[in-house]
Length: 217
Image 1: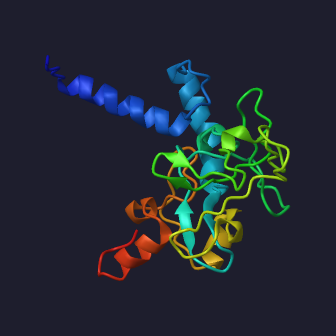
Image 2 (image 1 turned 180 degrees about the vertical axis):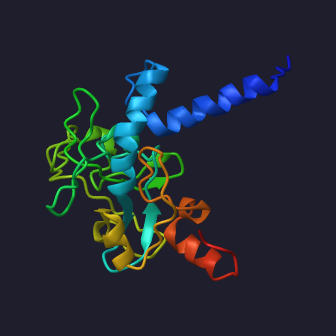
């Protein structure tokens, strides 16, 4: 296997690209912004992103957050969180806050997390996958007529059935009121509920880590 060696300037270029990608996400339409456009993007978007960040998690109301949603976390519609509307000039006052999918042709009205078993999403009681159901509200099955909407018999690691869970979108203040960590203010796109390394763990596992003397960020 051929080894590739990069000098300092090349390594910096790689770091700069990944920094750009974390900040801009998919907003450039897969065409790199010019330096001037990138500067203007940061000037316009970053202040509102820092002010209006939305934290997204999946869990049981009044219970623990079982899953923190990050940029790459898939929605019921199979598109990732970063492909939904996550930046707002003004956060909607209505609750729950809905984050529609921005992918052309997708009918998903709001980001909705679906638990996974390994690499695969859980199945509905009708035995069909989320992809076999409509991404529109109600999630009717496209493969059978007996299904009244996607419902999984899956039981979460917290001990509660998936039907007791919901996807929660909240502001920084709302999250602090619940006593949940908000982390540091960062300029990166679609960070959702990620606030530190422990956010990558399922909720009940994060509690075990915190209780073992490790620092939870």
